[in-house]
Length: 338
Ligand SMILES: NC(=O)c1ccc[n+]([C@@H]2O[C@H](COP(=O)([O-])OP(=O)(O)OC[C@H]3O[C@@H](n4cnc5c(N)ncnc54)[C@H](OP(=O)(O)O)[C@@H]3O)[C@@H](O)[C@H]2O)c1
Image (tube, rainbow, N blue to C red; front, side, top):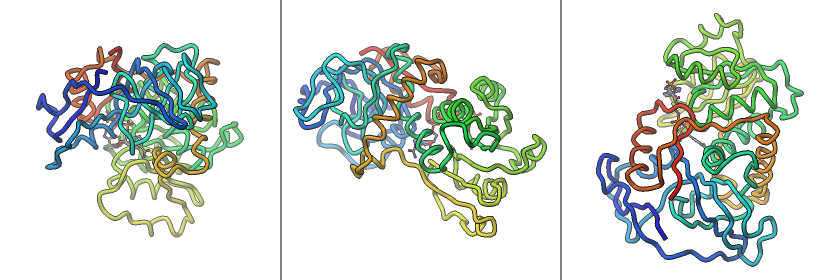
């Protein structure tokens, strides 16, 4: 089967950083689905894993943790899907990614695809949706049924892949007042279109802009970029007994003492935790993706495709990685078909 892989970790302008390769067809065992991949989307995790380093792989490594496709075969223990089902999923960081024609994934982290979307629009959603859903509803403890209506959230980095679905979930399901951050007119417009009532600039004074917007303190903060730089402003912006969740690793120590007098909470979200540790509640990701498919089909949520990058091949994937590395992507980058 066709795939895109790497053996060396090189800058993205090097044609050998991601190459077209041929791999043997995988075989489904246990609870695995064998999926015929129809569309993929690209995330910063791909560029972080691919980041230049001295390591050399003996066999090609395949990246890519966002796919939509059709179930081509099932392992003997599969109960949730059958051959022919359209599916969408992110997969597990501890296994090969989905930048290949066929791909194995545990059924407990796969969702039934929204019936109203094609593969391109579905492939944009899984990784960022799992992240945003877990951050808002599992980590920050916001009620998904709207019973926290009237509370407020600051979403730092609102126009990126995760922000594009987080704004929708916070507005359409939780009915929060949303302040999103964006630094350019086009990314600010994108946040407003998705449901943010206020947009501020993450490169300017965040607490001062919150005051000017009439939301001087927020009940929740979701940090989707540069945790180190934004931590002091987030600590100032969060209300007493409020909660901050970050999804972005810190480079240095965070001054957690800033939260003491407010009894504020800081919590991490890592969307690979459940699959990586095979937690007993791993099937929660199957359930949330299937629930999100229902919400998309009902018109409550919409896809977050920002740009379609063309067919799935190494040249187009290198272009997508280069764009993501620029840090100014709006919505999601999708490639299809093989
Ligand atoms: N923990 C997890 O499970 C998890 C899951 C998914 C992603 N992540 C991480 O979360 C981060 C965001 O992912 P993503 O897919 O949303 O990325 P993305 O799509 O590449 O995000 C691009 C957006 O980031 C904004 N941005 C750039 N610099 C910023 C800054 N200094 N402060 C705030 N916003 C800034 C840009 O807005 P403007 O153009 O308006 O400046 C742009 O719209 C990445 O680091 C990714 O690795 C973690």
